[in-house]
Structures are given as C-alpha cells and as structure tokens.
Amino acid sequence: MATPTRSAMPVRARHFDTPEKGDRAQCQAEREKAQQASTFARRLLPRGAAVALSDLGRDRYGRLLATVTLPDGTNIAVQMIGAGLARPYEGGRKQGWCAPFGAP
Image 1: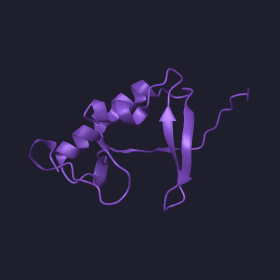
Image 2 (image 1 turned 90 degrees about the vertical axis):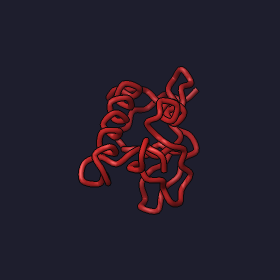
Image 3 (image 1 turned 120 degrees about the vertical axis):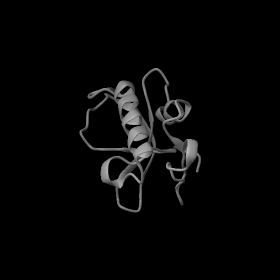
Image 4 (image 1 turned 180 degrees about the horizontal axis):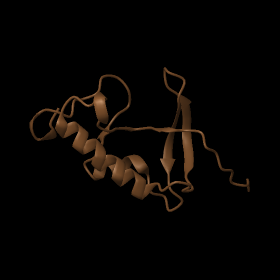
C-alpha cells in the first residue's frame, strides 16, 4: 500500500459549481450564497484534512482538477450540491445565481 503524502497544491474540485465571491459575484444574493458555501466547505474540509483525489486532469487554465473524497467516502460535490450551495457542473456555460429564488 502506498504511503499517503501531503501537498499544498491547490485543487479545483470536479462536478460542481459554487457562487462567485466578492467582486466576481453578480448580485448580493450570490455573494451571500458564496459565503455560505465557503463556510460549509471549510467544515467539510478543514485545513490539513486528508482527502482522496481521483479523476485527475487539468482545466483550460492549467489548474489541477480532481474528484475529492474524504476518508469516510464522503464526496465533496455530492455534499455541496445536496446542501443547496452548489450546482452540478461538467463544463460549458454556467447558470447564474441571481435570478429570483436562486433559479437559473
């Protein structure tokens, strides 16, 4: 069995899209939802948390992409989407977060 390694390399999680934060947000509702998503993600993935990365690749900007799974089998994308803080995303055009009631 391979020995786990630790890395400080940032990873963009696959299979979901979250609202934009700060100046990138298109409206106040998106900024608020982004803050909620960040808080939830930090609870799932505290700094230094062990994760498994699979389905590795690179996006068009060269960033590392991976499916992220916690040791207990928790899939980060499933959790974020299930909490209503992300939407399924597999590339292409993203839905907006500013329409009434968070609808696209």
